[in-house]
Image 1 (cartoon, rainbow over the protein chains, first blue to last red):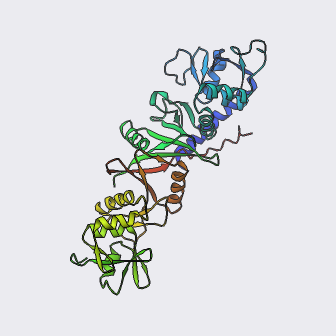
Image 2 (image 1 turned 90 degrees about the vertical axis):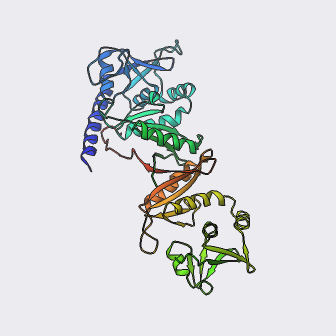
Image 3 (image 1 turned 180 degrees about the horizontal axis):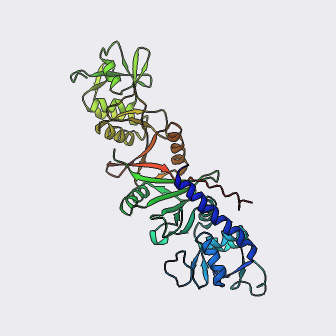
Length: 211
Length: 187
């Protein structure tokens, strides 16, 4: 085990501990359309700090600095935190009559699937990486599904850029070219998350090879 | 290898054979990475046959008649449909100065040896998977091939052929495998 593994372990454990403690705080978030918000800035900050979940509204580049804004969670973050029993989610834009009722994970999964292409597969990858202790953030600005950090944005110098290929997505030869080029030019790791038929996930990285 | 010596190859049943008796210099060919030994002869893979003919190092004899490269292609492509793409890769790697050997695997049809090394003394360092730019690469196969390469401690290299036969090579590896022990919140 290298030093970085030990660090990762330490940091990931710290995060996990924070996350566990959060479960006692009875944090409630609201689902607005397909977005999830924790209004209380104190609680929002705690959630953010437990693994860089979400983004404080209006803060451009969130760091580990205290903020005083509501926290917006991605639907992946929200579902993960819901599954882990860290937050409860009220659907305020949906069924007003049952506004006191909290969403169950499978309901949120359904909502995600309606909004996002291939949501289930992508969430599987998200969960796998989170469970392994990585920080998983949106990858849109890099053109991938997720950007993945060992420690966190602003700490790691370059994230892994993960794009999910489920068994229904075709991997074409040109994707290799793209991956190789990107990895070379932006010096980031372009990773393809492959969900195999047995449900297991593997992360493949391609690099141009000088033969 | 003596440049004027050509390996005489004959089609026996479905195999391309160079008999030791007819080819006193068979050892030189074998040492250069061609064929596998089967008792009294060297058995050649179709891509090896094509390469030897193309480079004037071999001739294919059918009923003692020498077959042209063109006819050899025709003959072989009737049996192996994707012979051309296999041959393109075989040829390209050979020309780059590596010893490349066909494998009995549809997944990774070739293995290659470091420059200056060969199959008689050394282990190959990489398995080659062949893919085409515009076509699908099956994820299951890719993952299977990677598993295979890992098992033998070799690299997995994808030879990607574009529409006009140019080849680019990519190495595939696995990442994000760290499993941190999050005992605390794994209920």
